[in-house]
Image 1 (tube, helix red, strand yellow):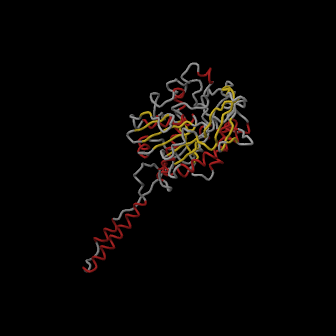
Image 2 (tube, helix red, strand yellow):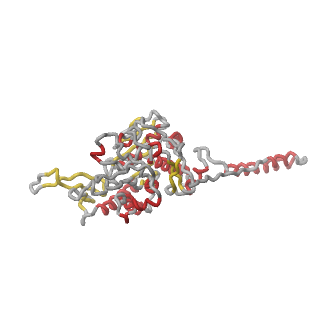
Image 3 (cartoon, helix red, strand yellow):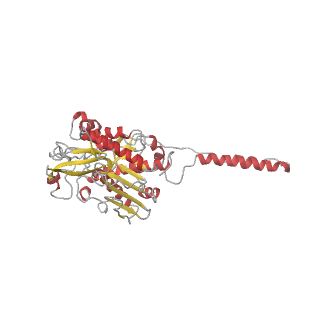
Length: 427
């Protein structure tokens, strides 16, 4: 594949001809001089107005690709090998999580993994400049709400932003699971762990005598009550990124210890299965966000991060020891629900989420397709603990850092930039 970047050129003429005509004019009667001065000033004002229409704003440096990027689909394109591309951070970043720190864990082929650049069709995705981004977000806050894949995203984001502020320190307030504060720019980035988004809790079974049996029971999910971890953050964050999906399966909640859905404090009848329960939770979560969060809060919903288990699921000796990317013609074999593979749930979840978000002001952050190619980029067996694989199996769900989530950060930063300087105003 050959990618050609279009060039742009153009210019604007000067006003020398106007000045020359004035100098060469014959002497005029004195009573006409004020009128001529007035006409000259009007002409200069008109000319300067035209020039200003052709002068780009200097408030944020934008390349030609940044200007045109809103006109293309950031989520469809190809990974292009770039041997000069290197990560912006290393294994010493204090915001790493050990199991994802693939440099420290000596993951094989990591330099190759990080030598791929995502190129959307029709434009070039700029790499985030952490100095400019934090300057753009000065005195503002960014929040992530959801499961560990949003935490994976957060860790990449924090390590990249720390390049611009080495004084960044860990932050854990407002019910946040983890986060960081960047003092040079007065910016906070936090993560609120809420794997189902709605409030859920273990409810032990009671005997007829009222005695609880802690080993048996159900998980009660209140579909109309947000999890405590993020229920009270409205008004604090200027940008929010939500996700859910990876806990909505029978591995997490087996049928003998099921999710039972409640609304208004009462169980929903007839009882909802996992899929219908997901739809109701997402619908209620969106209604809560739309009602409680200010309209000027920029809100995203990150679609699913695909898994790459091969030969079985995580608890069935599934593996992801790959040294190359998947080809585009392989993606449907791996991920299309009709093929009933172990990695089909990402597209299934996306369908539910996209339907629920239709007509809201929550933007889709669609990282699914670009991540489907990257079977090579998971921690796999390099988890930082010798017994980790024996206990949990290979990790073919989360991502190595540095790695694919760094590209998610590039896309998120571009979307925030486009919103800040777009027609719809700013954050």
